[in-house]
Image (cartoon, rainbow, N blue to C red; front, side, top):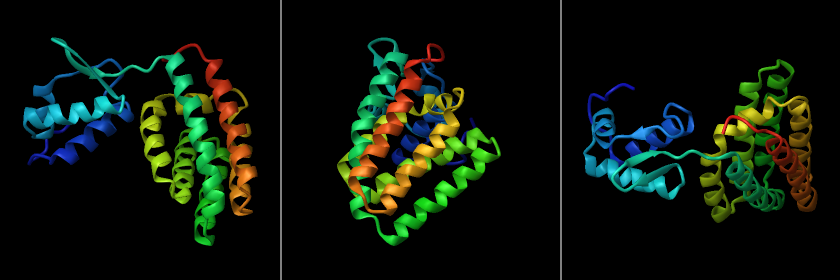
Length: 217
């Protein structure tokens, strides 16, 4: 990790450290030494402590007395629980998206789903997974349900490490593509009941796939 020529603000430190945890630059259970982080980010140790406290509240960092901080490891069981809570929130979000979507919102969703299909047909599952995350974020934005979106952002930051793994399960990518197309179609038709049901079916399938996994957490 490169040391900046000038220090970052507290918010920049928070974003950079959060991103490093989410994208795997900092691995689960890796120790987070305040002095090393302060040197990397060009910030004071007081700033780093504040940032670590914020990340602890989000469930990304855990701190132990006399042992310092480390990247929090999410167990397989907890990953399933997070997805179950996420399902409740995303079903609500899908319903509101169908009720509140503008024509421009629908065009955004159609553009993303078309891009996802191209990645799926090209067997680029990593890019497909990125599109998957982008589609869900856009649906949350369209819902304009700020409380649900804020809670979902926290859950997603904890669960991103296993998202790609579920896509790699046998036959999962084909089913995932169809499920996402049904969600977008329901929002396009402004049908809240169908949008909620399509999201529930999709995330139920993801949850079942995750339950069947036993390694990597």
